Every structure is written in C-alpha cells, then in structure tokens.
Amino acid sequence: MTPKTLLTSRLFRTALFGALTAASLSIAAFAQETSAPTLDSKALTLFSKPADVWPTYNGDYSGRRYISLDQVNQKNIADLKVKWKYKIEGVTIRGSGNPTIKSTPLMVDGVLYFTVPDHVFAVDARSGKERWHYDFEDHGGHVLGQRGVGMYGKWIYFLTPDGWFISLDSGTGKERWRKKVADEKLQYFTTMAAVIVKNHIIIGVGGDAMDVRGYLESRDPETGEMQWRWWSEPRKMGDPGSETWPTQAAMDHGGGMTWMPGTYDPELNLIYWGTGNTNPVYAGQSRKGANLYTDSIVALDPDSGKMKWYFQGSPHDTHDWDNVETPILFDTNIDGKPRKLLAQAARCGYFFVLDRETGKNLVSKPFTLTANWSMGLDKRGQPIPNPDKDPKVDGSMVDVPANGATNWPAPSYSPQTGLFYVNASEGYSIAWLYDTSKDPQGYAGGASGRIDSKSSLIALDTKTGDVRWKHVAKSGGEEGGGMTGGILTTSGGLLFTGDSNHLAAFDPANGKILWSSKLESAVSNGPSTWELDGTQNVIVGAGDTLYSFTLDGK
Image (cartoon, rainbow, N blue to C red; front, top):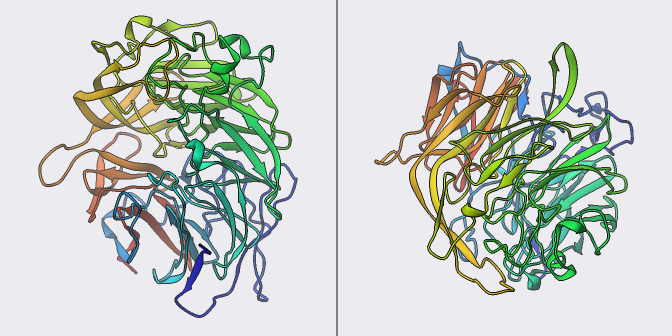
C-alpha cells in the first residue's frame, strides 16, 4: 500500500538541517527556506550542540546525554510544570495495541520529529500541535519498538519494521524515496534511529529468531544507495576472527545484530557500535569459541566501514545479552594525563571503560552483584565465560536477571561529577536449555524469573567502576515500580529519568530526589532538553503521550 501523509495544518516553514561537511568537528548546518539566518556556526561537535536543537538520537555525537543548559536547576526545579501534552490518537500497533513512544524526538527549527512503529509525527515544539503524520503499512516486520529518525538537510530518515529505509520531506512529511535494506522474511527487522556522520546515514538491523548474521550499513543521504556494509561475523573461514567459530555454517548464522544507535568521534573519525547476541541464542554447542564479533563494541571508519578495533563484552554468549548498550565517549585525566575514553554498562552486568583510540581496557567490573556467569577476565579485560553457568536442561542460576542487568534505554555521563549513570536490574534468573541436539536453531532455550530482583538507578565511578551511589525504585502498589526510560543530565545540576510512573529529577552528585511529576504511564523513552524562545523545555515520552515541561508551565 502506498503510504499516506496526513496534513493537519498549513505547511510550515521547512526546517533545514544543512549538509554535513567532511570537517572533523562539523555536522549539518541548520537553515530555513525563508530569509531567516542560518545556524552554520552552531555545528554539532563531539561534546556539544546548539541550545535550540536536538539534532540526533543522543543529542550530540558522544552519547553522554549531558546538556549544557541550566535555566532549570536545583534552585527552581520545584517550579517545573507541564506546558503541553501530545497524545497519539487513532493509532494501533499491530499485535500490541496502543503505541509506546520509545524514540527520542529530534527538535529542529521549532519542530519535534518522533516515531512509533510504522509512524512518524511532526509536532510544533511550542504548542504541542501536530504538523503532519506519516503513516506506513508494513508487511510483517517486528513492531516491538522504534527509536526515532535521523535528519540531514531538510530530509528525515526513517526505518520501517519490515526493512524499508525511507526519506521524507521535513516540512510536509511527503515521501521522497524508499530503499529495501533488510528482508523481513528472514526475520530481520529495523527499529533504530539512523545516525548521520558527514555524508553517511548509518543504519543497523535486528533479528535473532532465524539465525541470520548481523550487519551495519552506510547509505547515501541523497539517493539511499548503499555506500558500505560491515558484517558482524567474518565473511569466510581464514578471515580475522573466523578462528573463533568452528565452521562456516555457524559463522553464517551467528547473529550479532546492530539495532541501537552508536556514537562518533570526529577527531579520530571513528564510529563506535555495539553488536547483539550470538545465535543460536541459548545453545552454544554448535558454535564453540568466542564467536566474534558478536556481543562486542567495534570501532569502524565511517568512510569505509573498516574495523580498527573490537572489544568483546560477552564472549560465547549463551544468555541473550545483546551488547548494543550505548558506548558513551568522554575525556578525562588519568594519572595527570588527558585520555580519550569510552564507557559502557553492558547487559551482561559488567561496566567497561576503554581507550577509544586503541580499544585497550582500563576498567572491567560488575555493576550489579558479581556477574557469576564469568570466571574472571582475560588479558584484554574481557570476561571469561563459566561453562557451569551455561543454560542447562534442569536450569542454571546466574546473578543477572532474565532480561539482563540493563537494556537499551539511554545511560548518561556528567562531566560535572565524572560519574556514569545507568538504570539497572539486580537479581537472579534461571537459564534453561531446550534443544540438546548437535545443531540447535533459534532460541533453543530461555531464561525465567527475576528472583530477588530490584530496579535501581546506579552511579558509577568511571576510573574504578565502583558504585558511588544507588537509588532503588519503589515496587508494587498502585504507584507501579521500577526505573524506566533513559537518563538525561544537565549543567543545572540535574539528572532526569523515570521512577515508578513519575518523571523524577535527582541530584547527580548523591542521588537525592529533588522533584517528581506523576505521568499517565511510565517513562518510555530517553528524556531530552533544549531551549526555544529563551525557554528551556524538558521533553519526555510516557506510553502514547509526549510531555513538555517548563518552569511554571509557560
């Protein structure tokens, strides 16, 4: 079916996100088709963005989700109130009912762009009124979530559940072109927000039910044609990394999906991406070895797709621990010397800090309990799997909950405190093996239980991996429970995240709750903030509703 674009008001001035240049510290310039001045001088760099835009999934290239805005701060946070709400109406998600906003909205030239599966919305950032709505009918893709759009010039880029890569006009929502990038018949699906690096639109794929191999692609922003593709496993035996697989067949079906946005260092010209779990998911008997480059962080050249280094967080994964969690980039001094670092709180329960130039490990430490699935660390700082904790027919208990120690919601890093923040799950689970055959397929097992579990906001010391403070969420009762959504920190001395059906603001130095506002649903995306007309807005999605908060709701 041909997609239809729903216009709900006059066409507004087209937002331009100017062409990305090849300069190491520049990204798209923002302009309008009117005579209004362009914003070329306010380029996105590694650690900053213009105050009046949110131009990419994480706000800037680093993934820190730390924003230098302090109009809303610890002194006046009590005055933060809802300015407007936008509720998605008339949309039902196939197989799951009401939509849930998991995307972080882009905000360019006073317009917010966000998604749910099969839909893109443009909403006026000042009023919360809908500008346009793009509606797509997929044909069998995975509709669990959609993380948002990318933007280049005046073009919006969107991935549908069934593998279509679509370009839209930001002013009208009119479709420009579409390209097929993944085959839903092979159980691939596409849910991520595209990442723009210079003249590359970087997109990844999901899918782990039919034992396919993962890949990451760069697409041309003008034509949508592929510029390069990087595969999550070596292409043939004899290639680097193939020694960690027993056979070509195991490697061909090995998984390693790339379904979350990565980060980028313009000075080093490297993108950093997490790869997903190995297949078959819970049965490892047909794929003995570390299974590179699944469950890894990889550093790639964005111009060629060539890998510079890797670090594997879950070698020979048998617990469905996608290593796609955001690899946050930050700079700090260690032993009196400046260092360019990367940090990740991984789903397997380990916190890693790496040198982002070389991939050399500085910290590998569990951040919830002991991560007893490992027997220690190898010489590269990578965990060594404990075979006794592999899934078994009669069950195997590990001290990581069934869905992992954390998941896709965005973490944050504050240069004010030097701390890394993550919403984590603590507790135990039992891993089961269902298929004991020589050549298992699919999941071949599963995990059950969240035994003695709790949901926590954890602050980690990036130099040691030590827990500096922890906030344990309420659980049960009519208020609900759990830390939800992503995390945002600001120079106003605030940390925003979801806590038991509330949007809450914490003191990032000590974890004290400073403010909270009950929402109609739990926070479901990563909070963001930007300044428009001199007013700082805090934006958050909760279920099917997007909220804008300002001081005194003005």
